[in-house]
Image (cartoon, rainbow, N blue to C red; front, side, top):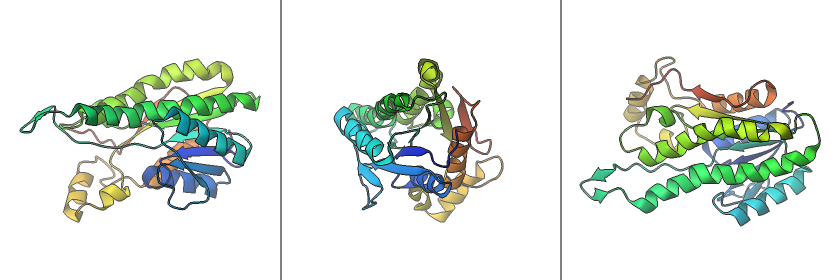
Length: 240
C-alpha cells in the first residue's frame, strides 16, 4: 500500500511514538487523524478514550468522515505502571494491573476492530494495514513489569490470529516491539539515567529515535508482503 494519499488514524498521536508516526506519515503525503485523550488543540486530532467502545466508535466514525475512509491504523496509545507482584506495601494493586491491560491491550483491540470494519468498505484487493505497538518487555519483561509485559505479550500474541482473521478482507496486521526509545517521558529523566539505559543497548548504544519507529511503521504499510509479524526494533537489546 502506498503511504502517499493513504488515510491513517494514529492512537496516542499527541506525543511520543504516536506523534512521530503521525508527523512522518503526513510528511510522506498521507492524511492523518490523531486519536488521543488529550488532543492538545490539534485541529487534526479527535478526542477519544480507547478503552470505551462508544468513544472509540465515535472517534473513528469522525475520522473516516473527515478523510473519506480509513486505510491505515497505528495503535500507539499506552501506559506504563511499575509495581512488584508483592512489595513492602503488600500485593500488586489489582486495579492498576487491570488498567494497564485495559489501555494497552483491550484499547488496541477496540480501535483496530472498528478500524478494520471501516477498511473492509474500501473494496480493493488490499483494503488496509494495522500496526500495533508491542514492546521488548513482551519477551524480556523486567521486575515490576508484570502488568506492562502481560499487556504487550497480548499484543504480540494476537498478531497472527488477527492477520488470519482479516486476510479475507484484504487487511494486513503487524506489530512493532520497540526497545528503549527517546520519548518525552524518558528524555525527562536525568542524563546519567538515560546514559545508563543507552549503555544496555548492544549497538548502537543509544536510545531509539521515535522517527525510527515511525519509519518502521511506514515500511510495514508499504511492504505488501509483511503480515502477521512482530518486529523487534531495539538495537539487539535483551533486558535482564
